[in-house]
Image 1 (cartoon, rainbow, N blue to C red):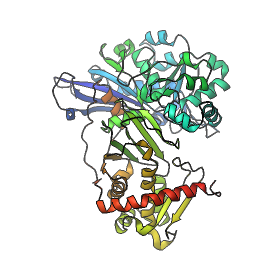
Image 2: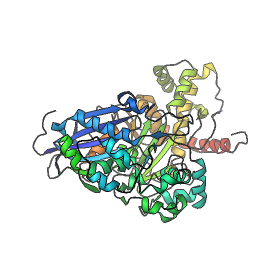
Image 3: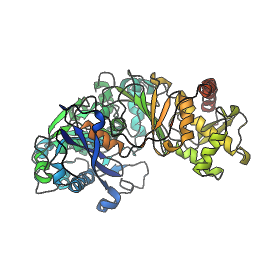
Image 4: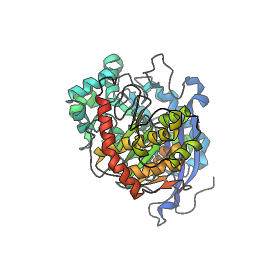
Length: 532
């Protein structure tokens, strides 16, 4: 790439993802410039796929294989080796122009460091690699990540200590979930007491990599910290009650929690010497991949939301005030803007749509034709599409409920196509009412965002405009925009416009009348004695 123009600087975002590490450089106007936000654009990108490019670690889909499928572990050294490889690919000429760096880390992963780590990080030598110098600082050789579901016992213990699921969510923004860091810490402290005694500092993935970049122990930002069951979601400070419910000695091991725009400091001399970074390049506090993704798609204000239509469907966006799910299924984090951020995940996303598509021998074009040929409301035919165990609402075993004359019959292919999609978005609307901030605009991402008829049903059911938005490496891009240190964050580059849909008043009215029927159907299905 060529050197940036006068008045423009480079900012680096690093996403430490589940299967790969991605580094993105953006060119953005310097803070004192007068250019518009849209002047931002991606200048360079480098990625490292763990399994194929770092085979010595033996990972499969980014994590160490284990006979117990509930165990999800990763060697933190692998992330550091991937970071160095990505920086080598960017090159010293490019790194030498970087003014700011920030990290996005897969949320809920945790890293454990010994005493003396801060001094060791300050004096990293460019004669050795990061992995070989940082590995001895780890009190736990393998970091648990978000795929780990081995902490059911610990979740229940913390939940009970805090007064139940609703009380836990009211305090921390979420009920205890097996992947969350608090339960993971409790399991580690109980099962590996000697290693816990050897632990001086608990980091998240984002704060760990940020600590290495800054050559000092980095605080945990409010956004990533709110995914731990340890942060008081309203006070935005560690909760003494949650800490006491988690592990003895945790308070002194937790690094401070700071706002998402905190400047940690200048980049460590290691990166100046080895990769040519300017010594005054600033390291901005890291955050989780979910908060960074909001920035990466350009969500800035309450009322804007993102609908990810992928393997699972996820709805997340900014709230005006903290609002907690009374059923304790959804999550509230803190967004990089400082606003509360809601997140609700539905496991039966494309999994359910694909099940219907394949059941009737359709391709995606045929599936979209079926949506186009059937009327809003499906003449009263409705589906609760729990083809897999569902997260929201909590359905532990698969169960598909067909209502209103809908049958699993060959001549009802089109009806089933519409029923599965309407059921998904009615569930999304009903089970997100606790957010108390109805979206006025939704940006749709993921594979399903290219299906125009799917977006139209979403717009009609949710009652707002839905815009297809193709984003590559949204978390890394969000980290790069955060690295500018500007508030509000610059808008991401304008991509190619995708399909979009506006709500049709007559269809909105149909779904308004249909919503109470859906709510009652869900209530009855969950209450059924034969529902596992």
